[in-house]
Length: 161
Image (tube, rainbow, N blue to C red):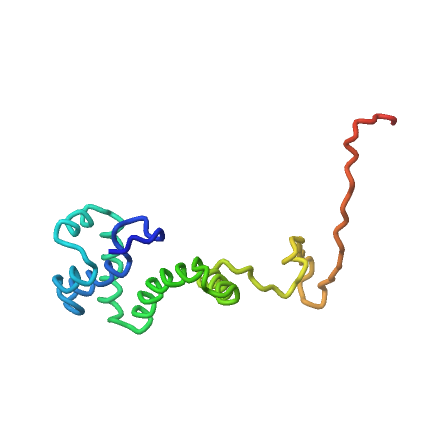
């Protein structure tokens, strides 16, 4: 069983995947799963009380039933496990900063946390774009480009007006 700081539970997503495959009649036997994950029957009894564990197992079971065991499902399970390796490499002082930077960039990308690319730089820079269509045909459309101005607010407290 993994004891790395990435896991907030004593079970891994890979374990839920393996259990789901076993319950659907493919993959390893329950004894093989217990050996590989270094767990025993009492651990499984505890996991079976965890609603999140049961939900993950059921999600994988439904996916296997509906789609069969696809390459994408296998790759996703493997990617979950590789995040642990990536974490260890990022925190290893012997690994070069360039490798760490690539791993961090990849993790951000996989998590969907990258800023979205837009064609309009003003939108990406925090600007506002408003489009009002007052015509009935595209030829009636008028485009007005405007640049935002910063208006200084005098909050000095001087009331010389």
